[in-house]
Amino acid sequence: MKALSRRKFFSFSLGAAAVAPFCMKQVAFAAPAVVAPESLNAHTYIESIHDAIQFQNKMMDAYATGNTVRLVQSYADQAGLESTAFTYDNAVAIDAYLLHATKESLARAEVLGQGLMYAQNNNFPFNDGRFAQAYFVNQPSSDGAYIAPAAYPFYFYTSAVGDQAWAGMALSQLYRRTRNAAYLTAALKVANWIVNNTYNTLGPGGYSFGTNINQFNQSVPSGNGKSTEHNIDTYAFFTMLDELTHHGSASNGMTWTALAGHALSFVLAMYNAIDGYFFTGTNADQVSINYYPVPEDCQTWSYLAMLNNQYKQTIDWALAHLQTTDTATAPHSSLTGSQSFTGMVFDSASLNTTVFDPNAVWLEGTAHMIAALLARTVAGADNLHGRKRDFDQALKLVNTCEKAQEELGAGQTVNGSAIPLGVGLVAATSVMDTGFGYTYGPTKHIGATGWYIIAAQAGNPFQLGDHI
Image (cartoon, rainbow, N blue to C red):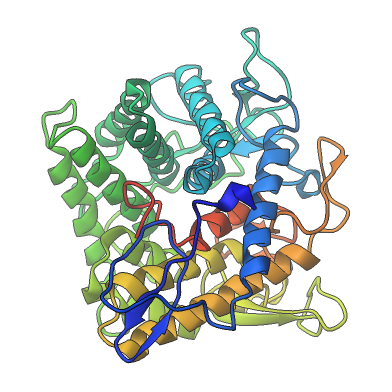
């Protein structure tokens, strides 16, 4: 597996015993290295990452190949979203390729980076530095790029702050890796859009959801509250810019440090200190707290972004309250026979649905948890038992993702071309309610697959270099 030669295991001692996590970043300990625990099949693990990368490649090459500027269709055709490429999913794909770090994967990350910059510079109906929620990628434009507005029937024109920050983080990672100034220029452009359009002083401050919340599609809710997740993203993005610009400032004169702190202050205001988790954000008034549902990503992403052990218990809360097992006997399950998958759900509403499967496992969220547990293994546990526990839990969830990749998503296609069984992860093991008016289902997804590639290599896209 030459493609993974730079993705070797490293081992570290935990006092009297040792475990062996997998990570891009060599961490030095005094004790000698030990072999990986028996619970991890190294060959299966390496093959699984290879197959996940092959899925991303197939999706990326569905309509154009080589250096053609493009973005990636997010879901297999069976999702019914046509050639839609979501901005967030493509940012995740860039991070996954950068972590994989082969020559081909680095080249692919750059093609997608060029695609983001093209979308930013040719955005319709806006052209002010922001990104749309998604684009169509099945036809070339007049200049040959496979990127066009995701108009009828979806009108994915929403410019949510989280999507902007994720695109900005991916561009920042590309700049750090390549030192191509165009990536930093694009990142600064979208960062200034966030500051100029969503900086908020109501209640606990932070940044609002976004502007022009899809006035072209009235079926999309127009509420413009504030999201904890989006502010986590913005905090991480602006922290990256502070480093990359050598403590520079936005166009309004405020430093990136101060602007990152403005997002962080909102995030911390959403912390439920009694129960140890973060609320989802505010209601549309931008002041009152939205107490329900409670999302998984706020709990894992907050740790990945802050690496602050004062809030590391959010991981434990999510494991205790947002973990489930999907089987064929669950109501409305898509599984058959003896299939069984244990992992994370989207939020507390997912477990309470009566219309969809309340035990559906969200594989992207499961990968979030792997990344957070491995980050805490290195940065957060204060004793051998805690590190071993986190690592073992992460291994179990890696095995869930490996098994899902092997078994789920048969018969799916991209641009009509068959996607082999065994490559790529579906978004969820069964149809899952998010509690926010949309669902995830058992359709292969570059977001879930990209996060798995990141997490299983102990990556952290909220930190420059993608490392814990």
